[in-house]
Amino acid sequence: MMLLLSTAYLPPVEYFAAIAKYGGALLEACENYQKQSYRNRCTILTANGKMNLNIPVARGGDNFTHNLPITQIEIDYSENWPVRHLRALEAAYMNSPFFVYYKDEIAEILLSGEKYLFSLNLRLIKLLLDFCGIKAEVNMTREFVSDCGAGMMDLRSRIHPKSKLPSLMKEWQKEKPYWQVFSSKQGFVPNLSVVDLLFNEGPNAISFL
Image 1 (cartoon, rainbow, N blue to C red):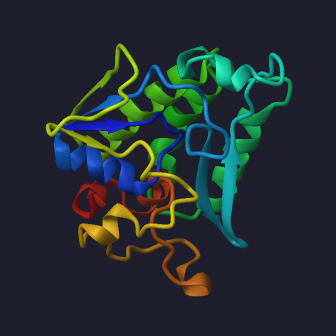
Image 2 (cartoon, rainbow, N blue to C red):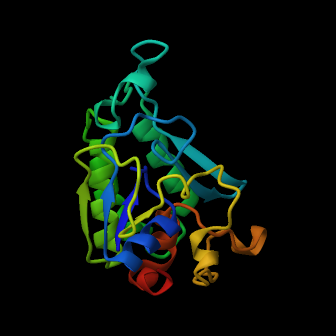
């Protein structure tokens, strides 16, 4: 069974659980960009609750998102969002047990000035797979997949911040709490960006996936 996913920025835990379950994934490289999705957004946990981190994309006209494939969407660096994201991650996770072990390599990619959103996401996904201990092959589609056959699991729309369905972790009965920095104040918050799991559980993250 081949897994089909959309690209995502520091994707949620269920994204990596799906890759681990199916042993690899195809990333949809021929779709058009969609706003308000995980393609340029991740969710972390702060002292004040959940927080979204968004990568701004360059605007080339009102209809640019409908005309360009996702691989051609450029990142907007007019604001120093990489530093803002890194500061948010540090404020949220500086007291987590494993933040210090992972932060530098994540920062190196975020500060690299990568031109395209898809390329940045792909570099981060491969790094995070390695951090999680997931050995899986990630490839890209060569044409838009409009109709998945029996041999493909399509989760492009399922893994979405506005999905009304239960998370895949819950559906697969894999959801279980782990220690979080602010759990004593807020209780356990599931299915955040996988960095939340990594910073709090480190090498043990694989057991939750």
